[in-house]
Length: 232
Image (cartoon, rainbow, N blue to C red):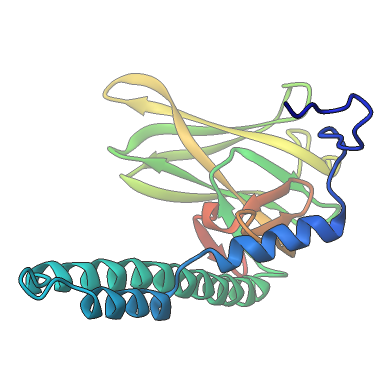
C-alpha cells in the first residue's frame, strides 16, 4: 500500500504564482468551443454516423441554429457595448455646450451670486390664486416675499432681484424658494424649481454618466435637468 509522507512538499494553501494564473487562463480559453470547433465536431458526427440510422436533418439544423443564435447574442452584446460608448461620448459633447448657461433643476434650493438675481418656476396642474413665493435663508428666516397673484395651469416663471424686504442686498449663498397659493379654496404649497448656473461638466465613465456642476449647489445628473435657458 502506498503512503503519503507528512513531509510532502505539496502545500494546498500556497497561493498560485502570476505565471500559474496566466497558464490556467490560457488552458480555460482553449477549452471554450468556437464556431470552427462546432462545425468540426458536426463533420465528425456526420462522418461516423450509423448509415442505418443517419442523423435527422431537423435535429442537425436545430443544433446549427442554436449555436448560431448563441454566437449572435454574444456578438450583439459587444456591439451594444460599443454603441453605449458612442452615445456617452455624444452626450458628453452636447453637455459641454451647457457651460455658462442656466438649467432648471427639480429643487427649491437656489444660489444667489455676488451680483445678479435668482429665478425659478412654479408648476401648478390646475392653477392657483394669490400665489406668494417666500425666499428663506439657511436659518429658515424669510428674507423676501414675492407676490405672484393668480397663475394658470402649467409653469410660471418668477425672479428675485437679490434684495431683502428692506431693500438691502442679501448675502451670496444658498436660499430656499417656497411657493404657496389657494387651490380650490384651500392653501397649498406649490411645486417649485430653480434655475442654476452651470460652471462645468463632469464626464463620468461607466454608470456614472454625465454630471452638471452647478454654482453653489453641487452637481446633478444631466438627465435630471428640466430645461436649458441662456438669459434668465
